[in-house]
Length: 105
Length: 105
Image (cartoon, rainbow over all chains, first blue to last red; front, side, top):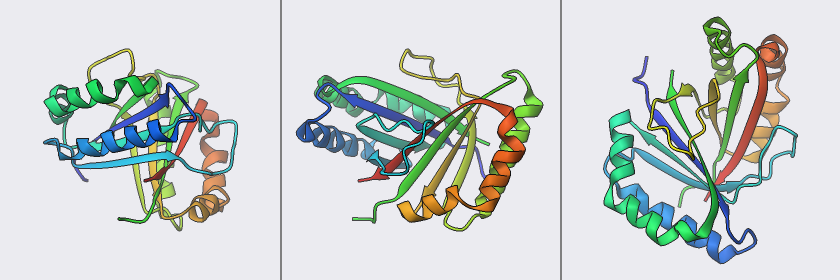
């Protein structure tokens, strides 16, 4: 069985939900996080146009999906200067952020 | 640039949140979905013991992260007999399900 991985799943809602410029600035900011030590993979996305069912939340504007090898790597990412820089530069863009941290089984 | 992928991210809350047996039955049921055509990858997980910050929702019991190549493959998965069988066999285990469908940029 493969080693357990950490999936760090984050959803962002924008201060200005209709601003394509703000959305793209956030996407660009998130992409710059890929170079941080310990980030095994990064996917940045937007809501997919799947069927709108009651259980589907498509109200977010942007998402990031990061994979880490360990809890330690995820904690180090949180404290990394480039992560703090991202929050300083892009934090004004979002009104809400929601994080789900998963350990694979 | 890589082709856009669909990330189908699902979180489950259990009817009996403290039942390890129910949690494990749901995990086992989810794993059986990996054989469905079009499911490029499947990760099944539980909340990671990352730092408990206000923005982190660790109230779910089980998660699945699926990757599809296209919206069509995701739609076909929804209608697949093995997916319906999973809902029939495991649907009584959860009290709430929340889905986020992402298209990578």
